[in-house]
Image (cartoon, rainbow, N blue to C red; front, side):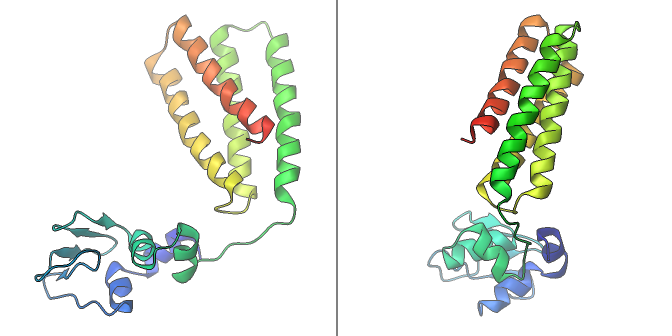
Length: 188
């Protein structure tokens, strides 16, 4: 099951009950993360919030905190699974380096405006990150980096699309995209 499938099928109340924590009719229970005499943690369908210690999160955060484990372990404890790919990271790294060289050559040879070059580089980099996100082993270092970079690249795309930056800002955006591509190509 994927993260979204687990969230659709497992409620926060189900998870709390697994740990033997009793929830009253109004949806409150004693917080397992700090010592207290009265119930201060509110249990919602898909999340929780403690009014005593401010602990909050979803079902995965709850399991991570109570079990003192990472997300991957909590994901698996709640029934999550994912396919493992053989030797994918080296293949993706090599493919990324080749794609980066090709895109650099294409951009340098074009007689387009600076803004067009940035858009083109941005779209190519987003496509590369999406490909890694789809093909890499979920929650691997490579997958996590791709997801993080993809969020930032989407932000840069919004900046370019809606803010209509000036030439100096376009150069800054271009340099930020190049840093992400260089990081991907060096594998660090």
